[in-house]
Image (cartoon, rainbow, N blue to C red; front, side, top):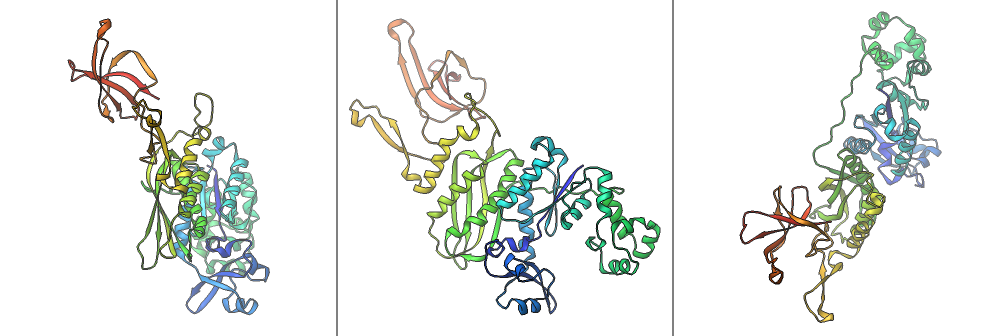
Amino acid sequence: MLWAALHFPQLPLERLPWGRADYPEPAAIIQSSGAKRTLVAVNQAASQLGLNAGLPLKNAYAIAPNLQVQEFDEVAQAEHLQQLALWAMQYSSWVSPEPPDTLLIEAEASLTLFGGLRELYRRWLTDTAKQHLTVRIGIATTPKAAVLFARTGQRMPATDAHTLNTLLNTVNVEHLPLDNFVFKGLRQSGIRTVKQLRELKPAALTRRFNTAVTDYLYKLDGTLPDPREAFAPSDTFSEGVDLPLEAPDTSALTFPLNRLLNALGGYLTLNDSGVREMALLLSHHKVADTKVVIGFLDPTSNHTHVLKTATERLANTVLPAPVTRLTLHATDLAPIERGARDLFQKSQAQAHSIEQVIDNLTARLGRDALYVALPEDDHRPEKAWLAEVLKSPYQTFEWPARPLWLYPTPELAQRPLTLISAAERIENGWWDNTDVRRDYYIASDPDGACYWVYKTRNTQDQWYIHGVFA
């Protein structure tokens, strides 16, 4: 197996506006332990002043009196890491969160699909940059080594045992996830690198530090197995973001909405699905939640299209109060064919471009603003058509009364059918001895295909298929 560890060192900060590279004021995330308060992450402006993680808060204020601080939120961090795990499932079915700030991805099975390790690496960097996340990537044949390389900034992939051992030997023991008692003993023994540590006899290490150190070293190089449990998403998609600052209008929701849609994208890829309807729940203080339902003509997993449609819809939403939390529920999912091409070799995105235009217009103008022209049974030209408002976000018009594809000879229906239209009676042909007396309906089968069917007065229990709607 080949493991990739994606380490997000600035994750506590980058969910805030302070984490953006262009934020001008120094800011930091702090963590309290009793009366002691220390910095756990700083933004670029604070770093340029000399502040860094681990610095006591009182020392930081001495350097930057205008420092903005916020307490570390462990629950929000875990929620964010879970959403990143959902996002990562578009690259592998085996994703394992490594709290508090790292994801493990089994990459071996994905190399052929994505065109090799270099292309996968490029995609991870590009996607995380779009989410305004800082990432360090470590790649190795064992999960512990991948995590260690990611957290130490070792960018060279260890794809074989020789490279793995060579790279491990250069790591300083201070980077190993060991307790203070072990670190003190190693310093007193003059051990500075993993190579020096591995040269010691395992029995001596175990006597001195129990089995924690030897077990870690053996899992690091693969001597001992290190099984990882794959992240298992729920059967339904429902994810939310607590806003660190209240959003006074919907324009401030684009950034957290994009984060949730990235998680939805991985969930849809994993399930080979597209979203047909989703609901955004906007929470407020002491005011009932605002619910915004967004529908699509066809199931889609196109991130750009979904984000644009949702943003348009939010722009027309009046808020009763500032928003404190944004939640996304995918209420209606449907199977989708990825990369499919139609009869004219157009890609799926090209084939569905008209549906995407209608989705965007509906989101911007409202559903009642769009209608289609239908024929009306009237000889007067000005009365020969009518305007039909779209009845649902999934359908632009009703089926025409006649299908374009008729069978040469009607066939007896072999599958259960559901009628979806009123009856149309046809009685004609007496003049050429082919008189018919039929009641026609539009019907659908369990797969969603639509047919033009009829039954005769003499065969009330038998359905015949005369045509197919395409």
